[in-house]
Image (cartoon, rainbow, N blue to C red; front, side, top):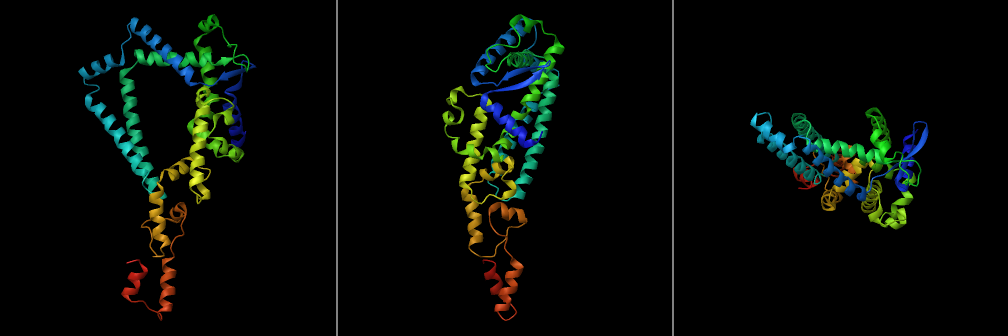
Length: 328
């Protein structure tokens, strides 16, 4: 299946609010999560948490206190996580003020590097904490929702399993259902939806992003999370296209590059453009060809300009001429 076809199928499923998939040689239907479902899941999580606590499972707070007493996890470790997260957020905000594409890419490498550090630290914490009431409740709720998302018909009124059948499922059977669900929902991640919106077939829908009734035929409060994400990103990309007529062709289909481009303030872009529109012959130190294209300006041909100006001056330029051409 081509990527474009995969995006079309994902679009169809998002619009109708469910996905059809073959399971045990028959077609079944997986409902997409809504905010209303999320509220129910929070109640179920609290129930599982209380059950785990009654059975003697420690809470995360209990385990962290024990780990601190034994010196395996300290307040300094927590401070490291918080400070690194703050540092990452500051770098993300700083990136929005960077106009040069290559400098943006370099900043992103730093962000990715620090994110990897904090992710490893969090993973270390999770491994040390082990099984807790919170982890147990989260896993049980996750499995509960996935199993209850399967239906026998596209009307989503007849569950695939009854209450009794659900309780009788073996762990391998549960694992098959969970894997089936996860395989289907790979197409509905943030990046998948972003790429979908930038496909050619989606272009006619950009104009309807402001009205969920026109877009989906129902009010915003009744949308699934996938539908909400799609309409939100549609508005974001439409806004970028509407306010940036000179977007380089090479990034028009790249959601990450487009979002970076759209995050640069118009004030910063205009400041750079005006510098070059003035005809001063200025250049950006370290800038590449793609950086000028990214800003929608032509790279100054400094060598050619000096040669032409020298010809006008009889073959040579004075220091004053050179300074003038450099914008001084």
